[in-house]
Amino acid sequence: MTPGFTFIQIMRKNTPDAAAWVTGNSANPGLSGLVKFYFTEYEGTLVEAEFFGLPNIITPGATNYYAMHIHENGDCTLPFDKTGNHYSRTAEPHPNHTGDLIPLFGNQGYAWCAFYDKRMTIPEIIGKSVIVHAMSDDFTTQPSGNSGEKIGCGVIR
Image (cartoon, rainbow, N blue to C red):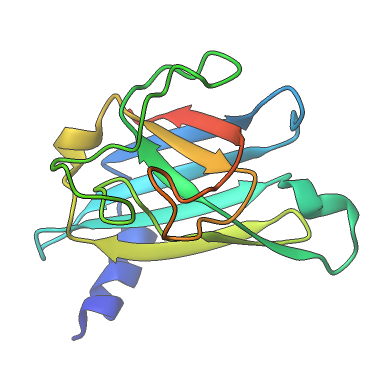
């Protein structure tokens, strides 16, 4: 049995150990999504994310990338300016922050992804926020990848 098979079983059969319900900012009121976090036997965290209402929803066949990060503070008061910087255990530069996640690939307003991350544990991210940015992360620009406006926010509970 491979880790991938185990991950599929975890997502199918288990309730998430933490989750963030993400809602959009005033310019993106239709944006919503759920990011689920699961414990694994591999000492890492399995993350599953599903989003609806991303900005490219009105263009048929449109695709776009959006950055997704975990930020230090769980304060999703509009305009999401109280979420702080990317969460990181250490003083590593971007893209090596603990909260630097894989990009979302939006297809006409919808995105789904699942990935395994050994850089974080669920207890340490409780109370922090998941942020969706208007643009993709370039994985180079400091301090946050030139990913643009925060268009979605949800507190990890």
